[in-house]
Image 1 (cartoon, rainbow, N blue to C red):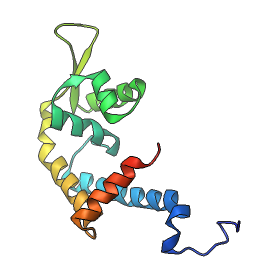
Image 2: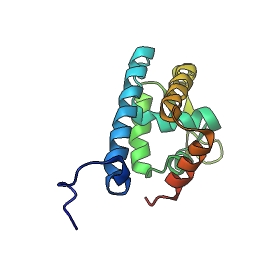
Image 3: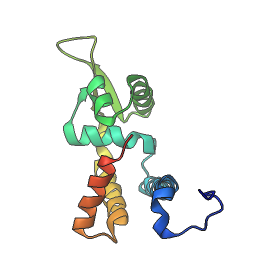
Length: 150
């Protein structure tokens, strides 16, 4: 098999270039998000907080363990993210009324005040990602990405 580095790049070589292509797209999308966060004046917000905010905006307050499951990150990573977001007063942890060992994560008024800007950034990003795709292609893309191995 010919060395992949020596091969000319062609758009038809997606199977060999999938990691590179996805990495390029992710960098572009992250850059877009960073610029929009700055433009919106969302102080204290980082891209890594997006998954947590999305879950809280969509489902409301929840235990740390549920949050970790929903964003598919281990508990120690979620704890670190939550601590950082707490220090920026975006969210807070409160003890569960029925079990004081369980921490419930909820939005603060500052975190809640970011909701509209967060929704706008998310909407604009999706528009950017999907702008050249038909509805059928959007569904197929989601289906194929979901089918890919982790």
